[in-house]
Image 1 (cartoon, rainbow, N blue to C red):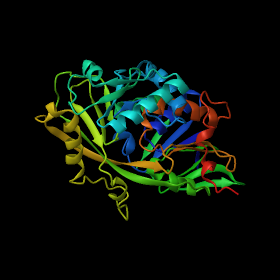
Image 2: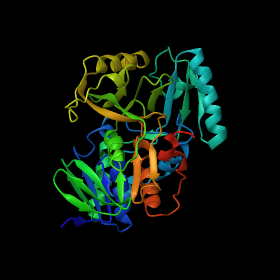
Image 3: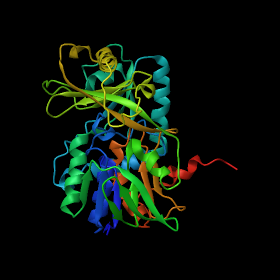
Image 4: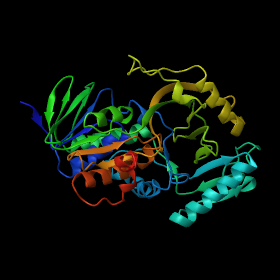
Length: 378
């Protein structure tokens, strides 16, 4: 006889664990399933940015809500997640980038009241004297920051389990069972579980999971690598990005730098034919990230890289996630396709998805993220 749960969350990344925690704190008997391990893909392969600046306007309310939640998250979860509200600099090196960045700053400030401004080179160097002379200016949002993605994920999971949630890793979902189009359970390669509520937080597997209930949306895996350096004395607290989005990262509270980035053809690097669990490192990626970082921070040239690892980002065609219940399939809820910027909104996602799943009005409107936005227009 199948074991019964109030809710099943597919995916043990940061958003899956956040959702599970929020469901468990509402008293639901919750099961988390993952074919790999906890935090094994995009949740563990990102720079840890908690940013509002340079967000898609649809994501901005979630990002601003998450910043408020991050401020007390360590206390709420009973675990230090290394959150630091040190600001965010997005660096510009060409006049065209400056013009575009100034316009974006004005739009974010006026439309959302975000405390973001454009700084010239002199002002940038006042708050971060280590930037290269090639930097003409930057956007700066002092309420942005960073945290440790792995610690945040495990903190959500730890708290969820303390509230009764269960975790099963190394278990692949094969089927979502339906009864008269209503979710009734999940079949894996190892067991069968009954539940009237299933949340798809499966990351790069999110499209395949959606297909199990007859849904689809345009999503593709994008390869990413992260590297970490040896520790240095504390130098600057800001999260760093660029107008060209070629790299990102920050210095951790332990002194090491965490950097990630893209080389332009990352969508084409990964071949998953028969190797869905493979996490390779490609020889050209880390050196390209290092070259990009050194253009902006040449003083790091003698700092050694100690580790490199990779993962896959679930990128949706319009680069914002697919969130919320689906009226055509009662009991099915989507929380996937975060397109490389899901970590920073994970506290809000956990809160609003749990509310929506229980039929409540979410604290933040998520209607713009509905899966039916990709349906053909008649």
